[in-house]
Each structure stands twice: as structure tokens, then as C-alpha cells.
Image (cartoon, rainbow, N blue to C red; front, side, top):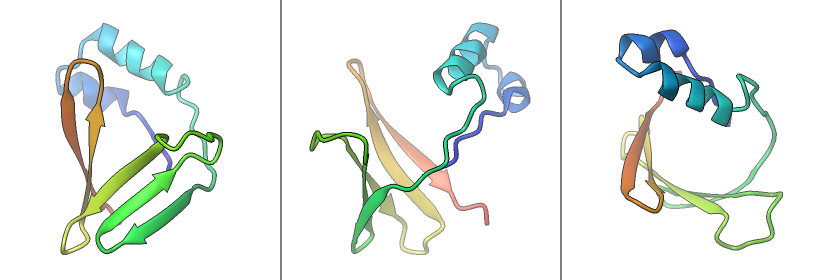
Amino acid sequence: MDVKFDEDKAKREGASWTMRKLVKMKLGRGKSEIGQVIYTVEGRKVIIRNPKSKKKQDTRSFDLSEDGKLMSFTMEDEKEKRKVILKRIK
């Protein structure tokens, strides 16, 4: 997975200066990490496991749309659950 942060787009969309700086810090000051992960596919569900962790709960489950153009997952933190939808760009 290659994660990039577009600060100009975030600024245009109204993200505050503080929020943009926090996101950049969270992503490692613009560095991206490219590597391999272990995954399994069960129908339209893709399950990705963190190879560096031995904990069973360090997995993330993604759901593919029927047409294969969208992939979604649920992010959870102490306050809320949010559904994130990723669009295929290639």
C-alpha cells in the first residue's frame, strides 16, 4: 500500500493548517513505505495481515464492490466508526 498526502488538495477542501500538519506527521513527514503484505481473498472480501505483528487483531478487512471499482473498510477509534471508500484510479 502506498499512501500519499496531497496538502494542496487538503487546503482547497478546507482542512485547517493544524490538521494538515498532524496528517503529515502521522504519515511520517511525507515518507512512504513500500513492501509486501500477506492477504487472503474470500469472495469479495480481502483480509490483510500486518507481517510485523504477531497479534491476531492486527488485520484489516476490505470489501470489494461488485464491479471491482470500489474498495471499502471501516476505521474504528475510541469515539466513532467511519466507513472509508477507496476508488480505483487505474
